[in-house]
Length: 327
Length: 112
Image (tube, rainbow over all chains, first blue to last red):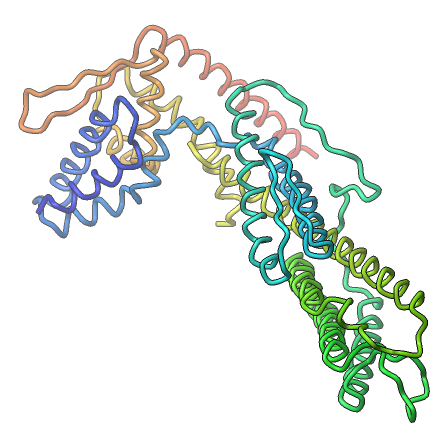
């Protein structure tokens, strides 16, 4: 009959581990529950005990009321969790892209090691890097909070202040953007189905000359069409919602697609093609395309950071409100 | 009730419960008896809020406690200390002042 009560007290005890007065707290709760059961139900049965325990509240919530409530990260520092993680991950991301593009490793012992890797390894590496960055920033903010010192944490001023990142409005711009992106995606699909690529050296489609080899042309075309389709889909979602998750998901998926570009290196994509192009122009093409893809990656990463900051800022007031309601 | 209003109620209850407990403990009482007394007065108190509050008041020296093991079931009795009486007087002064301010404002509003 009392197993239910003992199991409940054991659960509270689990959450109070490390507190000197734990046994006394549990004795008092036990005494209260038994007395209430007897007074209000006349007898102590499993069913009546269960009702009183349920009314007393979930074990974790009960235990939390005895804790002093000092947060792991001070409320004023919480916004830095997202800011610093975003900043750190941006650096991590750029180095990862560079490690893939230039086949180089980057080491800043003991805080950073980005090995030379292929695009698929990079896709697996980036989520781990994000978790690592989050952990490092959390640890630093935890230490700052526990030190109880009134530290002013630095935050660089960007041309776009992340504090001023506004929730985008549903405007006519979204509608026209959606129409344009849909038309672009449709046209690209038409060319891809008809010619197997959307990259041409000339605009004479009767005697068209593809820019890349057949396999590379197909691969790059599909990625570009995917990126445009993603843009169109996100604009369509924005007509229905202003949630920052739309931008975050779009940027995240775009980064995945951009990462896939490196699966077919430009060196092989332009080999022997087109033979009519001078070697100097081919070299220039490789360099300019690599730089363009890197710039797009940075821009998309910035969009992802802004979206994550907006998501973090939306969650902060709720967290603060929940914290205020504790006794 | 509007969830936001519920938050305000929780905030108000927190302060009120402290004064209430200090006012009740002129006579030694144990937790369950306090809950019953408060409920009989028409005010609902969360049991799991009362005990941590008593513990905090005791930690600060405003109430004292002792276990009574003379009966079958041990009970922890709480009573107010001199420091607790001083705090109670201060809190009641604040309470009265707030009440006067509110009354004054509401009266002025009714005369408009």
